Each structure stands twice: as C-alpha cells, then as structure tokens.
Image (cartoon, rainbow, N blue to C red; front, side):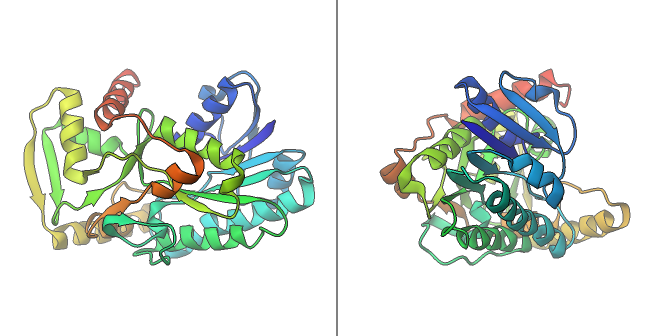
Length: 321
C-alpha cells in the first residue's frame, strides 16, 4: 500500500509514519521542512505545503490511502484556521479526485474541539457546537470531507488532547511542571486524552475497516484526567513536588488576549491564545469511545503515567527541558 501522510513532520504525523513504516507500507510523507526523524524504510519525503494545489497534485499521484493531518492549531485570527484547516482539506480532496483513481480511503484527522464541551462524555451523533474558531474550522473540514463520500470512502478521527514524546504543544505544560507549578483553571474540568502511538493505531483502523466509511470516531483513552491532573502527572514524571496554583478565568482570558495581540504584531505563534483559554474554561472535554470500540475494536491501552513518563524522558533527551 502507498499511503500519503500530510503533516508528516508533526507530532502525530511522525508517529503515524513510524507505524506505517514498521508494518512494511510505503509512505509518502508531505512536510513543510526537512525532518530527519522520517528517514525510515519505505518512506519518501516530499517537501511542500498542504495549501498549494500543485504540490498536492504531485503528492497524491498514485496513492491508495490518504491521511490528512496537516493543519494549524495556533492562530490569532479565525481566518487562518479556516484558510489552512478547511482550505487544505478541500484542495487535497480535489487533488485526490483528479490524481488518485485507486484511492481506497481518505482519513481526516479532525479534533475533539469540533464537538461540544461535555463533562460526562460527548458522542459522535451530537451536533457540532464548537466553542471557538479552531473547533469551528475542524467541524467545517469534516463537513467538506463527507461531501466527497460519493467519490471515495472518507473517515474522520476526532482525537482529544494527544500526549507522548515529541510534542511541542505540551512542552509548556512540562516546563511549568518542572518549575513546580500545577495550574488549575476554573473548576478544573475533566477531559479525555490519548497517547500518540495509540492514536496512530486508531488512524490505521479508520483506513482499513469498512465500518469506518462515512463515520467520525472519538479516539481516546478510557482513563480520564484534567488539566491539573496533567500537571501533577508531569511533575511526578520529573520528580518534582508541585505547588497548586489557581488561575482565575478573567486572568487567563486577559493574558490570552494579550498573547494574540503579540502574535499579530510579531507573527510568532505563542503557546497561549484565546482558543486555548476558551478550551481551558469549558465545562469539560470528555468523549465517549463506545462507538470506536464497538465498530472498530479500538483500544488505547497506554496509561497516562506511562505516556507522560515517555514524554518527559524525550524532552530531557532532546534538551528541551
């Protein structure tokens, strides 16, 4: 099988490429910049942008499966989320229609943020009610993808927060935990999460199982946590005794607004933004995984403590902590 992975240089993208390579699949990895970690057997690295139609046409030529992971998670303006997350999805689907006649599956990496907040467990059949622009863009990307179902099989994954070694998005959490801070935002709402390698395994199921066609699935661990729980687990992995720090909602929202102003002025995408603030102050981000278990046989066996231990070890070995 020849599989295209967009966003292959990212956290989840690298894990998926490793999983595909390990089982002997041929992989075409679309990246924006060279990534030495993708120097693996059977992997063809192609440099390009997921919003460039000409580059996408070359990338999809002759592939049997497409995993669309490329996207933007940090932006100060809503237009940027829609330009990249929605625009790249439509462009890639059009390229597949024109240049990939043997396409057997198109798998879109969506997001838990496309669905409404829930403290008890959101289900896939609930209507999309995102709370911020990033979630809106991911929900719209799903709608675009399913519009192509009459042309080729489409499946969508909705992972929650992804943990594990190699992620820049979670680096700030570990850096603060190393300083002995365990932050609590609002009521410290419950949330679902998944280890990066378990998530990659779920994407493979979405590419293979006929039950996945035309469906969206939450891919998450059965073990739930909270933001403060993530800080405490990171502190434990780093051997630090944490101090509990409550951050009032208005303080977080104000700091996020200032961070977005800085992003607009400098072009540098900061870890804090209004999107993240709205997510942190939501009543919860729990998702129900019953559908993925029942239809796909999906499991996410990695424990939170193990996922975070691996992440902490990786950050230290990479010199990031």
